[in-house]
Amino acid sequence: DSVEVEQGGSGVRIWKPSEFLEDVFPEVLKALRRAEQATANHSQRRVAVDVGCGSGRDMVYMALELGPSWEVIGIDNHTNALARAVALGEREGVTVTSLERD
Image (cartoon, rainbow, N blue to C red; front, side, top):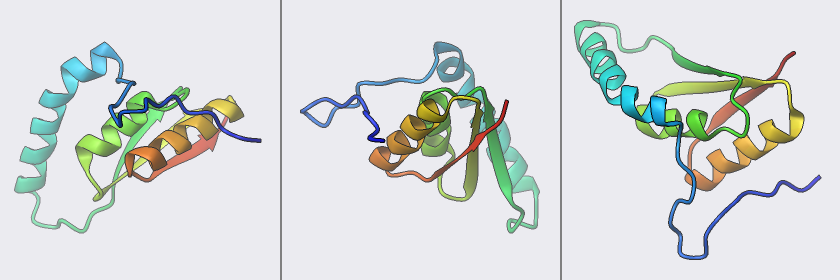
């Protein structure tokens, strides 16, 4: 199976996360950064989960915004959508984990 990922010829990102996530995520990031600063043990595993991730726009957005110290997991019940999500992450230079569950 080949995975088709939308991409423009100019290297410009032609996808965006959901409007809700885009609106709320800056505040979430601020809260997470404050919590990180208050925690002396920075070796804790940090995980973000996108349930019903579909083709991964929000999952990849979270991975980009949170950075490499976070593991971002997307859960969906559509194999092809998960393949597109992983491909989008690869294209954007982030690692995301996909889980197929019903």
